[in-house]
Length: 80
Image (cartoon, rainbow, N blue to C red; front, side, top):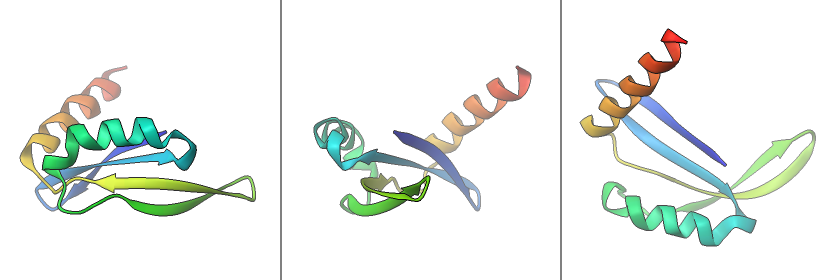
């Protein structure tokens, strides 16, 4: 599982990537965030230790609410 924030200009997006084997869980998470997304999930491949893995990924729109969350996590981990 890979979830990350990506800062764009003044705001941030949230991206979520999951192995195709975990499609049920991915669909559950996508349903929770779909109203923040502009498009549908897409298939992707990831290479780990020279082995290709099929993944599925979605990204939200760039919004202030994700910038707020990004700043919360970013500040928390800087203090550690």
